[in-house]
Image (tube, rainbow, N blue to C red):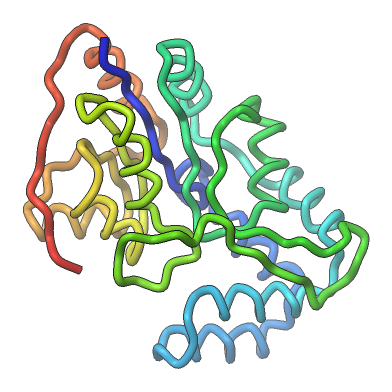
Length: 237
């Protein structure tokens, strides 16, 4: 029987809020953070550079930031049930995020999703060390033109390589790498926020979700009963 895999964004998708933004809002000086944000929005710097400079302003160690993330973050209802169903059925539940491991990993562990595959940026400094941090990007291998921290299309395509009949579902909320993955790589898309708007505008087959993962778990349950894989057209990025 073919497998069903899920590739899921983290902030504002798996979680009910943007964990990274919450940390930066709490700890980074607002005026300097706004300056960096403006440089990113204007295209002067990439998201990767924005994120590094922003967290280097936070003035807290990796350990302190991780603990605060765990205390504040919440996983979207039915996400854990979806994760458990997919894994028990032999599939992979993968996180693909432009964020950083020091808050993603601990939040997943607390939520009971610690066996999820994680694709994201990394801070390789000593956990007790204060900024500036040292960063690494093991998930930066890409098959797309965008300068992503993580190429979500590459994560999806890797999961398809073992068996082209396997279905890979993408779940996201944002732009850039999310829209690229939805348009060019995933078999099936679940979306909220800006990604949902993008899919509707560009005639990409999509199922919306809001408060919880109910549409997702309903779909994967039906797929295991024999529903056909949905194939969609690609859009150039």
